[in-house]
Amino acid sequence: MRHAYYEAVLLIERVHRHFLEVIKTDLDRRGIQDINNVQSLILYNIGTDELTVGELTARGYYLGSNVSYNVKKMVENGYLIQERSPHDRRSVRVKLSEKGLTLHKHINEHLEQQITALPAANISADELVKASEILRKLERFWTGMINYSGG
Image (cartoon, rainbow, N blue to C red; front, side, top):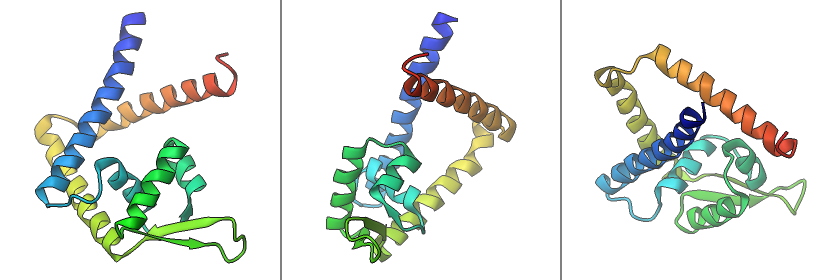
């Protein structure tokens, strides 16, 4: 069990890094240099919503300081619009600009191409469902360890 657990932990991290490289390769192919792969995923997760940085952090499980920095860079590069909440002036909300919506569309198209290619990689929908179930169990397990001090 020890070996399988450790291998799964390492594989999760490696698979995530590879996915980020796939996103980076697509950005490079499109000649997009003013946003990185992590920022692109944050942008994709915002989608058509309007969120605070705190909501985005909770939704994407990103590290808070990284989200703030990345949001700042995306605002500077014109991918996000940042507005103060009219109800709570301390709260700042972000949404995609036209440039951000265009990139969101490109990312979505790229993900659709990947989905179409999955059968050629011998990956079925049932296998993805099973993998997701296992990853959700690990997520709950690790969240419980954080919330209950390892217990």
